[in-house]
Length: 286
Ligand SMILES: [Fe+2]
Image (cartoon, rainbow, N blue to C red):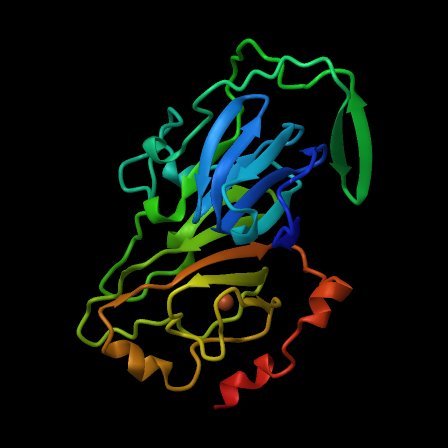
C-alpha cells in the first residue's frame, strides 16, 4: 500500500485513472463533486471516497483552496470486514455502518464531445498521458456491481463498552495487507473505574499510522490537527504521561482520526522524512 497526503494547489486539471490500485481518498477538508464514467457523486469533509482501479475520474471541488486529502493506494480490493456481514453478504445489525451509509453515483454525467481528451494513468510509480479522441464520459447508462462510493465518518456508529474496547471495533475497511479504522467521536468507557485511553501495547505484526483529523486526542500529547504518527511494529507505546488520570474524568471524546495498520513495514519518502518531528519518540518522557 502507498499513502499520500494531498493539498492540491488547484482543481484537478485532467482526468485521472489508477491502473494498479483501488484508492481510498479520505477528505479531511473540502467538498464538491466526484465525476466519473458512472456519473456524479457529491463528496464532503469526512468522506471516504472508495474508487475501484481503472475508474476514470476527476474531483471537482467547490473551493480548490480548501481541499485536503489523505489518499491510500490499495494493492487489493477494498472490502467490508467479513465479521460485519451475514452469510448472505448483508451488513448485520450491530455493525458500525449499514448499506444506507454507502452512497453510489446519483446522476449520469454524459459528455458527448469529439475532442482530444487527455487522461493521466498511474501504474505504480509510472505515469502515462493517454489522449482519447473523444471524452470518455460519453455514456448512455451503465449496469454492474462495482462502482465508486462514499462513506462519511460521521455515519460510523462507534462501539463502546464498560471498559476499553480493542482497536478492531474501529475497523472500517479490510484490504489485503492492511486495515483502515475510524476513531469517531463517542462516549467513553462507563465503568466507574475505567481507564478510558488505550492500554500500553506493541503492535507485534503491524506498522500503525494515525492521521489526526479533528478534536482532542485524549491519549496523546504534542499532537496537532493533521499530525501523522507512525508506530513501527514491536515498539511498545501507550497513553502519554498524565492522560490516564485525565481520562477518568471525561465522559466522551470529540476526537476524529483515521488509522491504518499494515502487515508489511512502511518506508517514508524523503519528503515525509523532511517533515519528521525527531522529538516525538521522546514525548513519553514527560
Ligand atoms: Fe498502537
